[in-house]
Length: 222
Image (cartoon, rainbow, N blue to C red):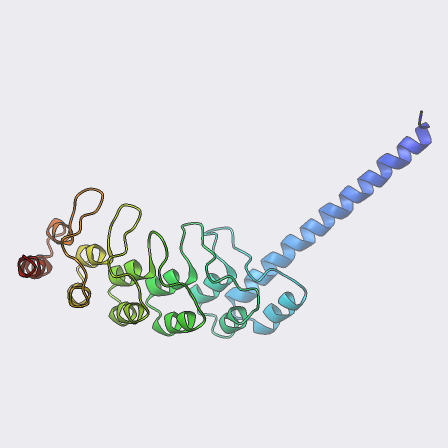
């Protein structure tokens, strides 16, 4: 049997290891917060130093579950964003808690230069479910819609409930986007899971001009 002394020594070592682990975990959490702070306030040298020390370039913040790159985009951290984007381990298809990717977020925010940059860096245009095109259409960001289509965005992409970008544009009252999507081949006759077409959405929110336009286009297809 082990002696009382050896048992006490064993317990002491275990406690020392536990305290060391707790201290290192606390320090790591502090570093994460400091890195997030540096990203938010565009402190590029601090961000570079944290990354050189091996901090995770794809770390996420707690509120939205967004990556550092998403935080930099939201906060307009113009110096930090390209540093993160150029990192060899950056994950462009990482998703926030709500399922958004960085390209989807840039499209939602209407940030055309960032959308261009992300596409140039290989961001995926066609995501399953909600897409960047849905967000750009709903927001009325015509140049982004056009850019996404130029880069082979699926024009009739279906959300989890089969809502298309055309339906989003109609519901949001964005006639110029509706017209652009139709001219590029969007199908106005598609229905979502509830059986609604883009025309139904336009009528539901009393977008009479859009409804009239869609009626004409649907007649043209007959």
